[in-house]
Image 1 (cartoon, rainbow, N blue to C red):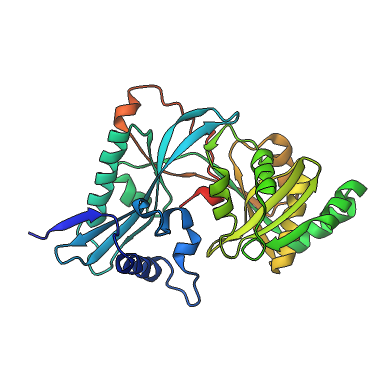
Image 2: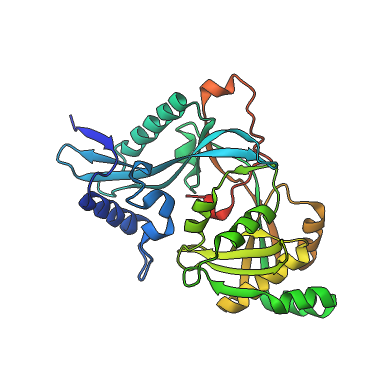
Length: 325
């Protein structure tokens, strides 16, 4: 009988082997960024307990996943429970099909029960595989596709003087080269588009996440008010405006246009919550090439908590791009 052991990496060599496995399986592209830089909160060796690996009896690494408990909050900041995020799921192709990842996920399910979390949330295209392990599709996010030349022609000539000045005055740069200071990040958290339920993020976490390589920001600040958007994140979310705060849909589109022009993109995607207000939806119906709804993620609900009323309304819950793993 083959002996498997699930544990965290314990030394620099094991962290190196972990990163090599993830790069080979999840980033098999030339010139890919180091994956640990894309997910610093869970793959930094200084946060070793976020990584869980399966080793065989000889200490060979076979599989990996990240497990990160996060607090769910309401719009007003009230805490309503904990959910475990799972990501960077990978099994060495030489041992796939042996049930190794299934054992790991069942171990994490036991941990969810012991910790009293509401469930476990992950992102994957392998819906059928995860559904067989008790996961189900939950939530809703909108993906709004914008064609740069088309929207510029339709929108810029109709702008008010105030909105045109806003567009011209937007500050754009790569945050990995020029980190945002704590005061600006704090304002961005405060002025982020308000959703009924989301994940709590500390200012220290925001400082780390905002400097992930390839990340671009555009913002305009007047007094205490700030309007902004983040595009790109490592090798993920390329051409995607994945976190933002804007006082109107027109200004959100202008932020996206400014970023796309800076990156020389012909088109870009806006990620938005399913709870998006009618004003924003009406604007996108006029200017977007397409607006499509997708499930937010795959949830394994804690059966010990389901006997109670689940405080998370999955149709209202949203995870911003920086928080996904």
